[in-house]
View (cartoon, rainbow, N blue to C red):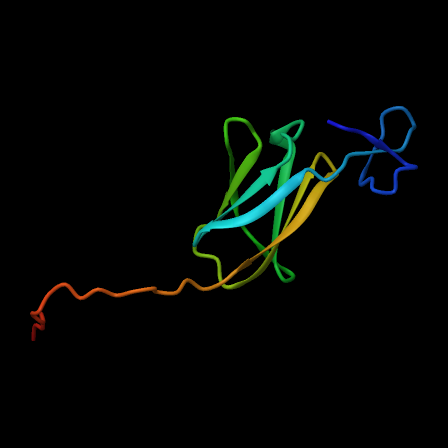
Length: 127
């Protein structure tokens, strides 16, 4: 993982081991909706320790409870909600052991029905 030092103004989030102020750059590449109840967070590199990664998802200022699972390479996390996401803009923040790994937003819109096919000429009505 690349470490940037204080003089680097692009640097984010202090992590200090020897009294030096060092920073880790944002490693979140994208956040996207992949189904009605899940989103995918793609990282440019695997976090140092995925067991310490905490995902904070907000819909505006309201927290959203999600469960995260990692791919084998530990470069993608799928965040799943127990019910469908409502339409809105969601902010996903990722922290690793008190270091901010980045924040991205994703806008979720209501799913629209593209086409309805009626495949029968009989109407099934029971009384």
